[in-house]
Length: 107
Image 1 (tube, rainbow, N blue to C red):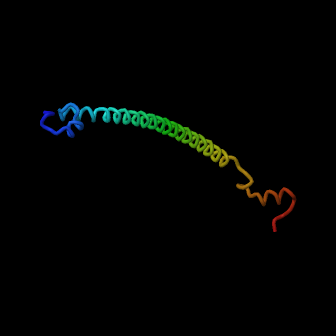
Image 2 (cartoon, one colour):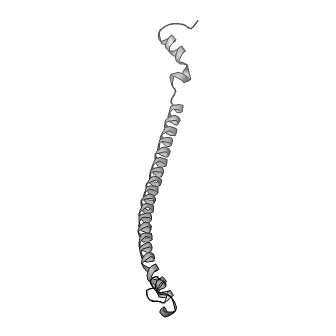
């Protein structure tokens, strides 16, 4: 087949068989590109792993804050409940208590 073409075309096809020539020129490029893609894939997988860890840590923090909020809410409700049951100056009337305690009359 090499004899059918002028000598200037033989340099483009070293073997003279088009399939082998294309394969021999593309395979190194494709192997290099595959290695590059695998490297990028490893980097993205590592990045995704770090983001996933961050998300899980954030979820744990949210759950912890929700528990803290509930605990403070319950403590606040208990405090309010006990304050309602204990009479205070406000229920008797602070002004009257202070005035009567000082021996003064309200005018």
